[in-house]
Amino acid sequence: MAASSPTPMEDVIRRKITETLNPISLQIYNDSHKHAHHAPMQGVTSKETHFRLEIVSEAFEKQTQMARHRSIYALLKDEMSEEGGIHALQLKTRTPKEAGEQVAYKLAKAEEKAEKDHRRRSLES
Amino acid sequence: MSLFTRSLLRATTRPAFTPTTPRLLPRLLARYLSDSTRAAIDNAIATSPVVLFMKGTPEFPQCGFSRASIQVLGLQGVDPQKFTAFNVLEDDELRQGIKEYSSWPTIPQLYVNKEFVGGCDILMSMHSSGELSELFEKAGVLAPSEEAEPTSSEAAEAEKKDSTKAE
Image 1 (tube, rainbow over the protein chains, first blue to last red):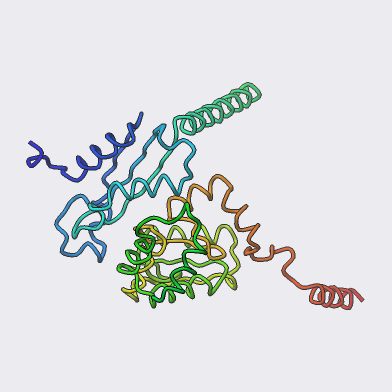
Image 2: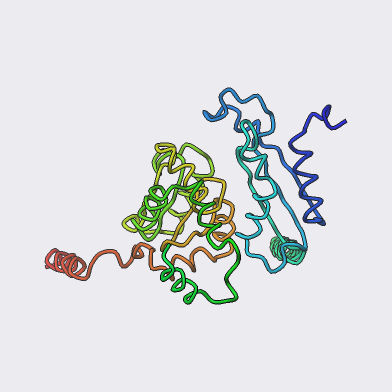
């Protein structure tokens, strides 16, 4: 089953992160196609070289960003060091609280803008 | 090792910190990172207050993440006089060595006053949160602001010219 998966690397990433960090949200983006023409990718046949991960987990609580990134790098050490493995890994690591604050901030901004638009429109009319 | 040095060693070691293999860690590290490479990187991070290990050069970055990091340093207003970039693509020893040195598997890597700050993602998030400008300001590595750029004598000179013109 696993051998026939079209995305073996993504599967490994998902499994390891899910097992270790028990994330409440995990987004895995495969950006490999955007980098396929880069010089270091010459001769690499893997379609899974560049990933972007957005992880929200309680496990990041009381950890610095550096510590969070290091723990992900440690989890994926083998995948990152093997020939033709993961070449680039972008990470966004947040706690549920931090993710919530960002959502709240965006909502507040959107509300502010809507209010401004409304006021402008009522002035114009 | 003579009996004398051994007892001396023991005397300087706190009893709580005498595991059976006290030298294991340095020896393991040495296997991956030679003393000469380590010394070379020690020197490299001391060349300037702000040091970036990147792929390519600031003028011609060879990787999008290195390019983005250079752009952030520019936006932050880091003083070019206080900045040095090292192109890891020019030196494979540095390219592998810096990863072990920082315990960080990717490039770019930023050092400020010999302290490892992080990679591209950390730089970006510190940039948008304001932590980065705080860090740079504390480190005293920002270029003087543009209003303050002409020195007082230059400003006086310019004023003199203006006043002569007016006459």
